[in-house]
Amino acid sequence: MQKKQQLCILGATGSIGVSTLDVVARHPDRYGVFALTAHTQVEKLAQQCQAFLPKVAVVGTARAADELASRLREMKLTHIQVQHGPQALCDVATAPECDSVMAAIVGAAGLPASLAAARAGKKVLLANKEALVMSGQLFIDAIKHSGAALLPIDSEHNAIFQCLPGNYDRRPGLHGIHKILLTASGGPFLNRDVATLTDVTPEQAVAHPNWVMGRKISVDSATMMNKGLEVIEAHWLFATPAEQIEVVIHPQSVIHSMVSYTDGTVLAQMGNPDMRIPIAYGMAYPERIASGVAPLDLLKVASLHFQAPDMTRFPCLQLAYDALRTGKSAAIILNASNEVAVQAFLDKKIGFRMINELIQRTLEKMAVTDTPDLDSILASDAEARALTGAMIP
Ligand code: NAD
Ligand code: MG
Figure 1 (cartoon, rainbow, N blue to C red):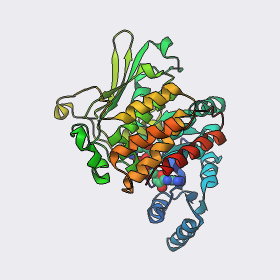
Figure 2 (figure 1 turned 60 degrees about the vertical axis):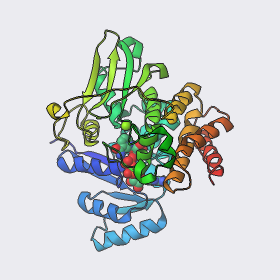
Figure 3 (figure 1 turned 135 degrees about the vertical axis):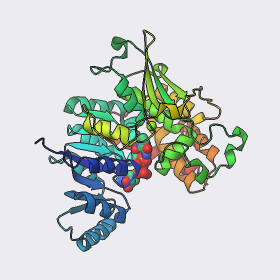
């Protein structure tokens, strides 16, 4: 019998974490769970521990660790080790018992452990796009040097990965690639009167038409910063310059992205909008396994629509393209400032239109620098957070 693939799921209690465990549960013969991590949702993590029996469970604080340990005692699961804090995330992501790491922590908080997994030569299933946006070349070099496999889980990048030749070696010119066509749903405000965007509430912003996701990425979808981060993510994953990455709005989210070739061919990957498709693809690669998602019924879909993004409606997309072209630490500043602004919007401290305003002002105030290592990346991140934070009333 084939050895079970042992998984470490960083961010197990989140939207991607839960979908990953759904796929794991469908294939108990193929996958074992070595570690599960969560930040504050102790009860949810305890339930997951009961169902999947990991060797280790990690939470954010000592207090949360005490709570989890006491819940696990009640459940008679004392053999599960409980750890806490950022170092513990890196420890489980690099442990010799772990084969694959699902990097599904949201935001910059996921960078150290995702990078550690890349350096340790793990199969890295990357959902945490912010980690790659921040660390770019450093992350790609870590994968190359350790011989790790990097499988994109973000649905668009997973689609592009599937539409690229199997021997793609990050040289778009040699493979006849004309452009990457990154599809975007346009989010909940695609057709709303632009003049009324100042008044939208967090509840309206997180109500995504096609996908159910965590709150931060849902707001990013409403501003289209999510697509902006994905443009930068695509640049690092596939080595395509900004000019060769085009965003196409496709409100049905049935085509998850496309690759356009120099001979006029366009390859698209399609499916129902459900993250278990890219998750199952990454987990089983190069094989394919059941994900629990129903096959696409094209007759029900009936028609597919496409339109160009309007940068005045979605200034965050323009800011992200500009940051990619600027290079150096610009993407780190963009990402950090966005995280702080989105949290302030969710906390009702600022309006929706202030998100792009704050990011733009932070980018104007802060000089870009070289960031060759994790410490310098985290220093830029901290500086940008402080600058944006100081502008919030
Ligand atoms: P989520 O908010 O639902 O879950 C986030 C997870 O990260 C939770 O388990 C939480 O406990 C953990 N976490 C949060 N802050 C942490 C911290 N400081 N330290 C340690 N752990 C922490 O988010 P999500 O929607 O699952 O998204 C996760 C990542 O996947 C994001 O980077 C997102 O951009 C990416 N992604 C998500 C989707 C989706 O459909 N949800 C699609 C594509 C990409
Ligand atoms: Mg995506």
